[in-house]
Amino acid sequence: MNTKARLWFQSLNAKLFLVMAILTTILTIAAAVSTIGGFKRSIESYAKDLAIGTARGIIEDIKRLDPELKFSRETAEILASWTNPESVYQIDIFKTAISDGESYIEVWATSKNRPEEVFKNDDDIRRMMELPGERAELITLNSGQTVWRVYIPIQGGRPGREIRALLRVYCNLDRWNSVWKSTYSFTIKMLPIVLLLEFALLWALTFAFVRRPMRKILMAMKSLGEGDSSARANLSSRDELGQIARRFNTMADELQGMSQEREALLSEIQGFNATLQERIDAALSDLQTKNKELELLMERVSLLREELSQQERLAVAGQLTAAFAHEVGTPLNLVNSHLQLLIGEQSTDNRTRDRLNTIHLQIDRVGEIVRKLLELTRPIEPKREPVQILLLLEELQRLWAPTLAARKVRLQVKIQDDCIIRMDRKQLEQVFINLVNNALDAMPDGGSIDIDVAQNRSLEWEFVLSDTGTGIPAEILNKVFKPMFSTKPEGKGTGLGLAICREIIKAHGGEIRIDSTEGHGTAVRFTLPGDDQTRAFNSQQGVTP
Image 1 (spheres, helix red, strand yellow):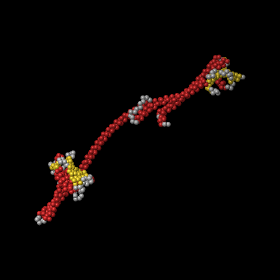
Image 2: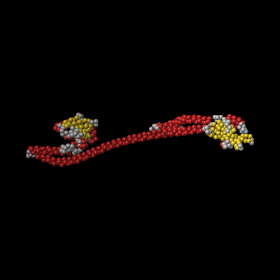
Image 3: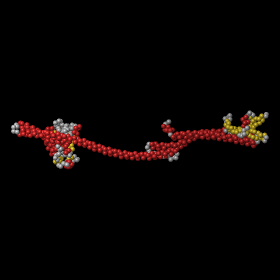
Image 4: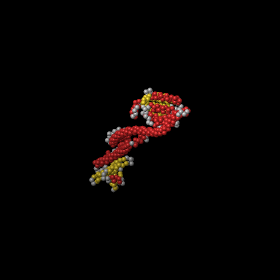
């Protein structure tokens, strides 16, 4: 059995159809059997009535022609006239008689004109003659025929001489059985056709009133289950299926309303989520901004702490230097005075005087170093005046020329002619000298130094001094501006050069930084405000030019 047939047998329509078909078949067969049986009983009843009526008619004719029951020839003719092979095929009359003082049953006449005697031992006839009224029996003869046998007693004779007789009539049912068999055969032949017509009508009715409405309801349910909220079962019938369809439509309307409410609620929730997300994004953005500001603040605090630490170290170094200069300066002055006295004596020979002059020069040099140390410990107070940077660099370039030639270093300057900055010339010279000295120390085998000066978008003058030296390792790049920190060998650097450069640049309102890659040179970048910016900066710092 294929899937389609199995599904059909599992459906309500198939079950209903099969149950109704079985019931219809049973009822139809039962009706046919009942009709055929009733028809047969009607035929038998009709034959019985015909036999009884015939017997009554014969008795009336006998009593009319032979009231004394002598049974003459006319009686035999009457019996012959009532005999019909197709219906009443035999009529017998029995009466009692006495022979040799004993009674017996005498067959006086028959429809076949064959007088017969019935001996006295025929108890059935004697019993029938005692009947108070008529009696009919349905019997089957030895020949197989079914007949009605009717007994009716006859009362007659003269007063004082009453005669009792019995009339027996056989009514043949062959003719009526033929009619019944014909009807039976026709019924049996028509029964399958009637059943087929009933099945077809039943199929059409179940399809129209059950299958089609159920299919509409199921299709509507399937569509609704697949998400089609507009699915409805369009049935106008008033039966149970119509009520189910209307209830389903009501439920679908309620579901559609609930779905719309849910969509509206989801839309509202999405709106809330979007608003909440926007607020969260805004809060996160604000938090990120605050975090960045906090990071910058922490970085600034760290720088300030570092700068404060540096200032403290500078202060300590200044105090130590001042104490050192005081302690060393006084003996040096005494030594220098005595040397001058020795040099001025006439008794001192020229050789000794030359040696004393050498000592005097070295003592002056030591004093100059001490004075410089004292200057480093004092706050930088720039003496501001207009400085033409091109002329300043040309003078410094002439000063550096012998050293650059000896070190095999090429210096190239690129600057605008109108670059004029209001600042302390001596301090700016010290910045360039310190930076060029550091670049020379980083190029023991020669190289090149480039100085580029240009004005940026903020109208500041940006200075870039780059070299092709060994560069600075990344791990110490953030330490180069700390006082007393140096990458030079011991005895060749104090660690104060870049720290002094930064203090000078900051004092003039600028900024300085270093970009360097180990093995690929170093670029020192610092900015100084232009002439107008310098005035504004001085005004903010409370400095009078």
